Length: 293
Figure 1 (cartoon, rainbow, N blue to C red):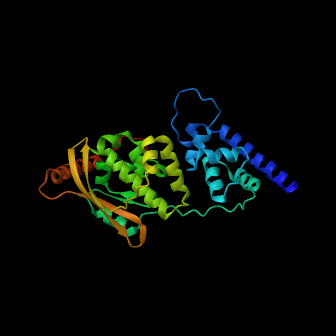
Figure 2: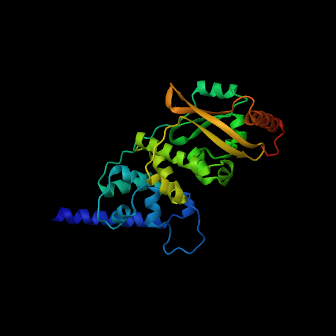
Figure 3: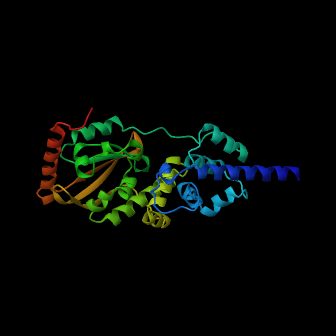
């Protein structure tokens, strides 16, 4: 009986701790858009924390109310969503009676040297290398001219699915934005099946589900797709319409790295426009920079 009472007190303490930390965070702190309207609660709402953690609002509510125990992986995700430091994270796990060992993080991927050499040699063909979760690991000059200047995107946000849903320019670039976005969601779903405990993948899904209703809807459809081949039509602001075939090659040295190339058949209008775009990109790279060092 005494053990049960102690357990209830500890769970209540855990719930109060979560509520306190939630109240100290703003939507902007965790990368959510500010709605501009009045908020009835200080800090984040319960449903916002739940979405960022990729768990149900009911599940998170019961945690805050001290009515249930959480598993160590869920606590680990919540700790990251609430931006807990090492001491706070240790306290959270102590209250929950869980071991405080961290979920093993995979090191940040770096492009394989062989793929980098291929990129360097591709001057007339746009190409990028994607890693886990669709992270953009490397690209050539023509890919930057075709899609966007990836170097201007912070490394932690350099992710293709995230770019499609958060960059307004992508909706103008892709003639069939919805079709491309649905494929991106299906590819992320395939990644989630392969690495269900990947914390960065969970954070990505939580962020996009909160920021974009269409992502949340399509994620719930559970469609999956691998990175293979296809055709895209782009409305490029410099050279106009481009109908491009895309193909994906997987690195044997790291099966989680994929080289995607966009090509067009010789003699087609798109092939000629790619040549024009390549010349334009070369001129841009040769032009003196106006930015300060």
